[in-house]
Amino acid sequence: MTTPRTINEYLEQLRAALRGADPALVQDALYDAEEHLRAELYERPGRDEAAMLAHVVESYGAPDEVAEIYRDQEIRIQRAIRPPPPPRRRSAAGRFFGVIADPRAWGALFYLLFGLVTGIAYFTWVVAGLAMSAGFSLLIIGLPFVVLFFGSVRGLALLEGRLVETMLGVRMPRRPPYPPRHMSLFQRIGAMFTDPRSWSSMLYALLLLPLGIFYFTLIVAWLAVSLSFIAAPVLKLVAVLGHWDVGTCVGAPEWICSSVEWLSGWGGATVLCVLGLLLFFLLLHMVRGLGYLHGQLAKHLLVRRA
Image 1 (cartoon, one colour):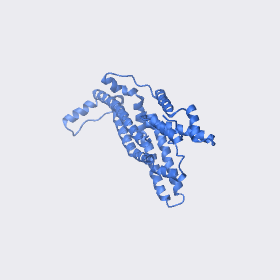
Image 2: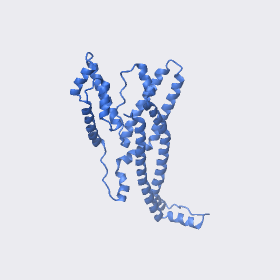
Image 3: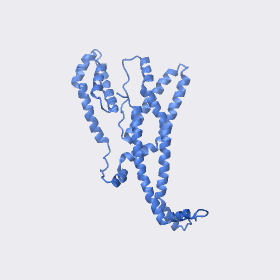
Image 4: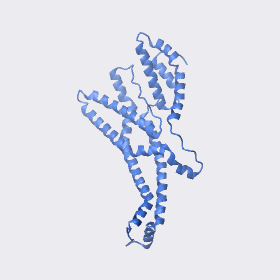
């Protein structure tokens, strides 16, 4: 690999050396490298880029060396922050009931359950921002407001990425894309508007509201049914101790009445409790799968592709 003579050449060689790596890792590595190179160039204003890069290659490392370091660090970091995997179970029953020990299932449950709150916040911010940007476009403050709004959307995308990585375990960027330095102010503003990631981040923010409503409704309804079934023996015990009349079946066919009377006994309460437990474990499996799918959606819309 030839020695780079400009910062852009160094970054392109680093991008090529990281080909095939996670896009979030590539974005973080490029940000760190460009920040370091710009700082080196700023501290030595009299030195040209070629001389500075020749010095940096000796201290910071060549692009292929830096890429290898980032790959190794990513493996170590993921091993350190990744929760311990649940014990591997061979039987179907063990795999089904073992989901209760999977931290990713619980993380996905809480993320999807409270996704309605973040969905409302993101949706409101993006819709209000777009409406105000269109309204201010005729005024002198229109351009600064639009720039600030687009910057806030990128900030929300970075924040959402941290939530997705923490709760769903999907690798997301930990640093924003480095702002371009070789462009003028108006060129940077134009690049912000033409960057597909800006618009895909808005699309993600808008999608999070209907997805949050779907997730919340599904999980709350499923939890209500499963927990009410699980509580059937407790309710039966309270009814017995309180000498409460659970009622009789009137006006229905005989086969329905016999079923209702059977469910009102201890046998029916036990069956409902077991069914509720099975539904709860099934819910954990479902939210784990939904969490994985949502994480892939977030990665596709919020991460800049190399």
